[in-house]
Image (cartoon, rainbow, N blue to C red; front, side, top):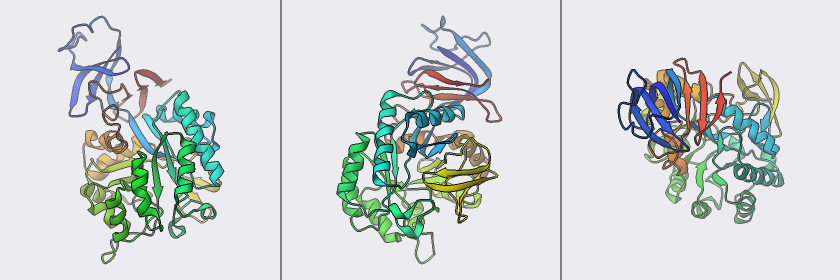
Length: 391
């Protein structure tokens, strides 16, 4: 099939009046003439049906590497229905791949959620693709618990890790932990051997402890500035280590609530689009009206779209990842192509799947979204299959 658009945001440039030919993968990207025919490499494609979105833009499918729920559904429900509902909602807002993210809970409940992520990944979902699981907790520090229930926190150890890995059956992509825990530094290399991305979060680690974890193989930090020791001019802390280490991936909830726009711009200036990873940390109430909900077992309240615990602390977000991209353009004073990278190619690179995902490029999977200039999603494709069409 072919799709004709006013602009296509490829991996390296923005093409105007372009036509993308695709099946499961992207076969060709070329300019088209006024007649609708491709100006280059048209051989073999001229008889294919053309989807005419010539007033719209084609952007790479976004990848949300940190998502707890949406539309009243929670990863901790441990149900295919919940993961599929999340998948469909994410596709409707421009996300083509995501990591269902667990909460700290009873060990058996976490194992059940990890097992279901694997089963749903194998079975397949009807919207955004499940790219793997994200184990957020229970190896955290109560000092920076955030919305994580500390009564279920554990000291990191090989036995519990292996139980979680067994439950995930090879589908776990990332794990978050507090690096100051006694066995953390010795177990980070083991986690890397299992193919996991190790993220540091909900932690009171010092600058030196964070550096040691990064040197041991940790990949980055969880929702920077939130759930961690902040930056002081005599103790740079976790934040100082993340922003000063060039190859530390840095999650950022770019909703203007979790981090002030001026500080977010500073993060971009220090990390660049290659290592600043925009996330939502979406909660089960994402996509729903204000009111009272749960995040795992923790009661939360949504007021004007902001999620808080009963104590008043922030508890994830209802942010749409495409809105984070849109706002980053003005907050960071960057162009759209650069902003898109932080929510597509950068997370794909972090996960080690950038050879297939994360950008519109010949040979990669056909994962992309059509939007209008006001950032309203019109249609979404995942691996060449249309999974959303605006009614």
